[in-house]
Length: 306
Image 1 (cartoon, rainbow, N blue to C red):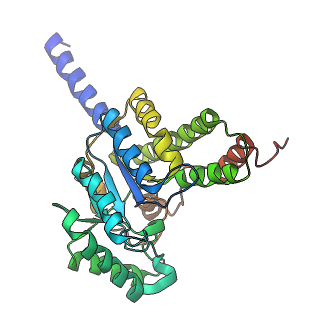
Image 2: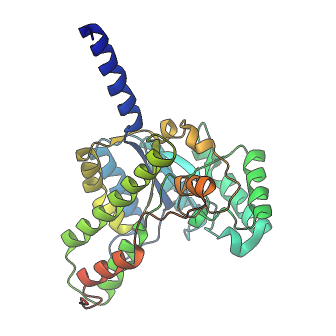
Image 3: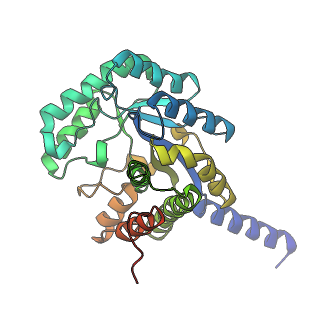
């Protein structure tokens, strides 16, 4: 083989592999603004997340907001505006964070529209909506009604590429705080990073196996205490593992996020849902009971079992 032919072949091979192993991810945060806790006042948590994203050179994240969660609507909207003013993208997460299956179409869609009206001054460009709990409706008829609702109101579904349980870490450190436990935040952080990275990379492997490529990932996170505490470490760890942090709008140009599977297995993200559509296999990329047991042990909430 001539050198030029070999070089061309090598270039094509490397280009192909890089396409399969793209390792790009956008950061998104649900449930903003969250209420005050023993770790953060609500406004301080928001400003700390903005600060840490800036220091970590993450210029744009997507913030899925619940405009009705705060006691004072004007203050809530001002908090959300601070995200927008710092380059982040505001999206609708309903006004009150209802679960679609629990409240039904009328209550859910009315609440989503209420959120739409309050957030309208803060939403610029393409409009995104994310279902609380990733619950898009376990009844196909209900699911289809909401798909039609999104189209009528010019929303894209803020689908994620993989689920995780980052809010559990916040709930548990606050439980430990209430009980007066001495919290080893470094140990909690290591478990947090292991959980988030493990779930993301598991979903990436699923995508490569069943879709034939690594998509532009959309990472689900929450505006919650532990996530805000450890977000800078998470960004550093992602980059050290070869991940590139990208703009969420760029991530949503991936064809993966135009998929409309006919199954209702949406609770773990679009990759698990597409895999289920193709194979009938349900994929979950983390062992929640095991993670919870480790976290409880680190926080002194449970004795280590043999």
